[in-house]
Structures are given as structure tokens and as C-alpha cells.
Amino acid sequence: MSKVVQSAFVLFIATMASKVVGFLRDVCIAYVYGAGVVSDSYLMALNIMTVAFMSLLCVAIQSTYMPIFTSIEAELGKGKALKFTSNVINIIIIISLGISIFGWFFTKPIVKIFAMGFEGERLALTIQLTRIILFSVGLICVTYVLKAYLEIHSYFFITGIMPLPYNIAIISSVLLSKVFGVGMLAYGTVLAFLLQMLFLVPYCMKKGFKYQFIVNFKDKNVRKMALAIMPILVGASAYQINSLVDKNLASTLVTGSMSALNYAYKLNIFVIGLFVASITSVIYPVFSKLGSNKEIKQLKKTYCQSINAVILITMPIAVGAFILAEPIIRILFERGAFDATATAMTAQVLMCYCVGMTACGMRDITVRVFYSLQDTKVPMRNSIFCVVFNIIFNLLLIRFLKVSGLALASSLSAILAVLFLMFNLRKKIGRFNIQSIIRTIFKTGASALAMAIVVRIVFGFVSPFNEFIGLFVSIGSGAIVYAIMVLVLKVESTKYVIEKVNGKLNRKVSRKMSS
Image (cartoon, rainbow, N blue to C red; front, side):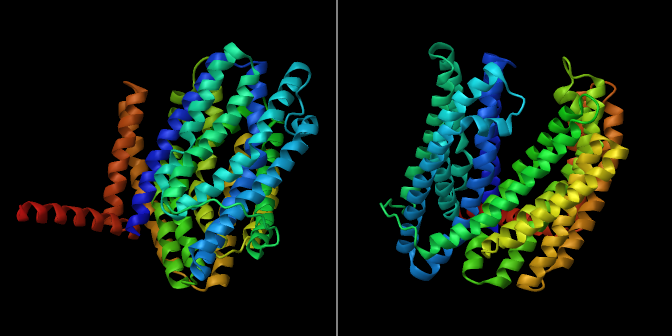
């Protein structure tokens, strides 16, 4: 487990660096094009690519490729697994080319699905940019295969900084587009996706990958992968439907509700993407190897450790964000047209998202276990189950809590999703140490409650002098209290950290004594 924790930390650092450059990319686009026709059109073209392919197809490809690769490697050797990889890449390129050609001729209806309100110049420019950017489909899909290959071989830092060449290329294309025209945005984006893919190639070769021109649609493992992808696509589509329903219902409420939901959702996703994704990306290759080798006992143990780690990390963040929601939103967003009313509304929405933050992390880990066992049907049923209950909760809560009710509905459906998945996982692999998970929830909950009291007192004392300093000091004080509490209560996930620190100290002492 030590290597897993180290890899998760490395990926966390790499992801942080990538997100900073991604933020600079957005700042650059805003600086050059502001909030006008060009920025609307370009961001919508990118959104089509992100939603239709990166959030659906690429995730499905990566999730199904990993367990099948590890299974082939374990049973038939690395040579067969590498042939399978080349075959998958070649088939993806062929299918992607067909998708791009189809998109070239039917760009307008595709754009209208995503941007019903676009007309005139905005619609024409979006169609122009989307038509070119669609030729990135194959590049993106191949990138995710290479990314999965590297993560199987524990190259997490490289996959973490993978967006860096992409974002740098986008920034360059935005600046060059002022000289060479708006079309440079689209061509620059295709180049950015190409550079992102090429960035991974040398590292894949270093880990033994050799490209072969093999195209065999009848290969049983390719067929297995194709069959497994379909339920994942259905499940991922269900989450997109959830988002679409939330946004449509928010559009029926008072002005500002849509923005409040969007800003709070992005903060919620930022936390989950930064902390939980660092764990899931690292642990999934481990799950895949354990699943393919039928090491169910070790899989259960690793699953419980991963869930406990997610609880240990996300619980204080969720409680802290709940307590400090309003000052966080005020410091991040309250300027210009974003007034105190918008801050209050967005803070309430963020508080409701915090209720399900830990559950979302637990759900993501549990889904990966099913994928590692090459079972994509249970997660698909879970996604459909979530959509149904999310809509029911939406309709019930929106009457009383308005836009905050939509966020609370998402949180409640996430909690139900975890219970549904764990129940089905127990049926699939037998009993696992659920008592350990329950103990961790109660102990971290108690630690987070003590932290919340301290945070509230410290913030109330310091914030009248300076709200930003008050926020910083209260978060620091809360983190110290939480760390002390989880050590005092002996939360199971902290044992490894103590052992690791003690091991390093002992090694340093031994080296000094020997010298």
C-alpha cells in the first residue's frame, strides 16, 4: 500500500500543476476574447468535444482496457498484451476517422443539440470550429489508451502532467489567433491534442510498448472490450442527463440560480477531481491486477483501505466547506456583478453539495472495483438508479429549497448510489470489512465535528480584522485539530502514515550512526 500512497501524492502534485496552467489558459482566453461571440463559440466547440468524447468514450475506453490488458498479460504474457494494445489503437483510429467524417457533414445538428440558443454568427462560428476540432477524436482516444498503459506501469506523474503540453499549446494558439485569424483556435486545438498524445509515447516505449500494425475486429478481447464499453457509455450518459435535468430545472428559478448552481458545482468537482481522482487513478491499476489474478481477498483489503483513505481526506474538506461556504465564495467570486445576494445563494448550494462529497468519492472507488472485475452492468444499473432518484429528489426539494434543493438532491442520490453499489459488491465478492469503513466514518465524523467547532471560533475571532486572513488561519487551525483527533481516535487509515514516518526516521538514524 506504501507505493500506492506515494503514487497518489505524486499524482496530486502533478494534477495541481496542470490545473494551475489550465487556469492560466482560461485567463488567456478571457483576456484575448472576453465574453463575446468568439469565446462563446470556441468554448462551446470544446464543450462538445469534452462531453461527447472525453467524458464518455475516453473514460469508457480507459476503464475497460486496463483489466483486459492485465488479464491478457497474466494469462498469455506481455507480448500478447502489447498486440492487443496495438490492435485497440488501430481500431480506434479507424472508427474515429469515421466519426470525424460523419461530424464534418452533420456538424450543424450536433451543435444545435448542445447549443440550442445559438443563432447567426455564433452558430456559424461554432460550426466552423467544431468541424475542425472533431478531427481530434482519434488523438484523444489513443491518448487515453496510452495513459492507461502508463498507469498500469505506475507512471502517474507523467499522466498527471499530461495536460501541460495541451494547455501550453492552447495558450499559444489563442495568442496566435489574433494574428492568423480565429481558425487558428481550432487548428491549434487539434495540434494541442496531438502534442498531448506524443508527450506520452516516449514513456510508453520506455515501459516496453512497441507499436504494431494489427487490425483484427474479430479478436475476442476486442469484442469483450466493446461489449464492456456499452454499459459504461450508458452509465456515463446517465450522469450527463442528471446534469442536464439540474440545469433545466435551475433555469425555471429566479435569475442567478443557474450561475449559483454552476459555480458551486465547479468547486465541488474541483475537490473531487483533485483529491479523489488522485486516489482512483492510482488504485485502479492495482484493482485491475488483483481482479485479473483472482486475488479477491487482497482486493477486499485494498478496497477497504482505499475507501477509508477517501473518507479520511474528504470528510474534513466537506465539513470545512460547509462551515465556511459563504466566506469561501465571497473571497473567490464576489467582485463586479457578483454581489452579496449571489454569494449567499451560491454558498447555500455549495453547502448542499458538501453533504454528498464523501459519498461521491466512495462511489467512484467502488465503481472501479466493478470495472476491475470486468463487470460494467452493475455500475450502469446504478447510474440509471441515480438518475431516477435524482429527478424524484429534485422535484420534491426544489419546492422548498429552490436551487439548493437541486444540489441536495444530487448529494442524496450519491449516498443511495454508494449503498446500492456496496450491497451489490458484497453479493459479488462476499463479505468485506464493512465494520472498518463504518468505524472510519464515525471517527472521522467526530474529528471533523471538533475541527468545525475550532474553525468557527477562530474565524469568528479573526475575520472582523481581515476575512482572508481569518479564512487562512481558521483552516490551518482546523487542520491541526483534525490531525490530532484522528491520531487520538486511532483512525485506521492513519496507521500507514505513522509507520511510514517512523520508518523514514529510523532509516535516517541508522545512516547517521553508521557514518
